[in-house]
Image 1 (cartoon, rainbow over the protein chains, first blue to last red):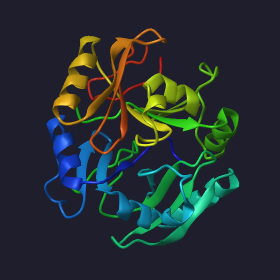
Image 2 (image 1 turned 180 degrees about the vertical axis):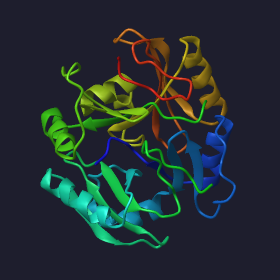
Image 3 (image 1 turned 60 degrees about the vertical axis):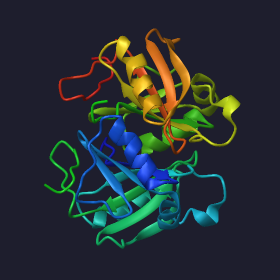
Image 4 (image 1 turned 180 degrees about the horizontal axis):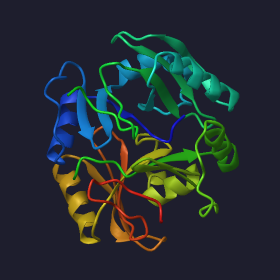
Length: 142
Length: 142
C-alpha cells in the first residue's frame, strides 16, 4: 500500500441535500457524474457522496450489523487490476477482514472491500477511468 | 472551503493493534508522535489513529447519541486562526450543525467541529505546527 487515500465516500440519506451542502461550502460538483452520485475533486483525492444504502450494499456491510464504519468508506485505488487482490491479502494478513473479495465492479473495474482491526471500511479498487499520477494523486476523468 | 481534506482521523479501540495493522499494510508511522496517537503522512494529507473515546470527547459527540459518524472524523485545516470560525459559520449556513464552536485546542491551536446534513463529522482546525503548502497539501512537521 502506497501512502495515499484515493476517495472518501460519504454515505448520505439525501443526495441532493448533501450535494447542496458541500456546494454551499464552496466545493464544485463535477457535472458529468450526477446520476445517484456526486463527485468533488479535492486536490489529489476525490470526495464522493453516495446514498448510504448503495454504499452498504456495495460493500456487503448490510449483513454485518452495526460494527463497521456506518455510512463511510475510504478507498485505495490501485494502478493495476491484479493489485486489488494483492492489497486485500495484505489487509487480511495484517489482521483485517475481507468483506468482499476482489471481483468485477458494476462500474467496469475491479473492487473489493476490507475492514481494518477497528471496523473501518476500505474499498480497494482499480478504476481505469480515474487516472493516478506518479505522486499517487487521483483525478476524475480529464 | 478550498477543495481539500487535511486529516482523516480513525477512532480506534486499541491503538497499538491499529498502528500495527497500518504498518503491516506498508505505511510508515511517524516516530515523533507516539503518545496516545499515531500519524502517517499520506502524500498531501495525514492519516491519524486516535482512541475512539478521545475523539468522541474532543468533538463533543458523546452527548449526541448514535447519529453522527461513529469513530471517524475528517479535518479541514485552515491557514489562519480566524478562518476556523468562518468555516464553521459557512457550515451552519449551509445546513450543517456546529458541535463545538471555535476555541483553543488542547494541542495549542484553534479548533471546532461541525456535522454535515448527513451526520458526518468534520473538524476545522488551525494548527501552526502542520504546514500547508500553496496547493493545500498538509504535512507533519519537517
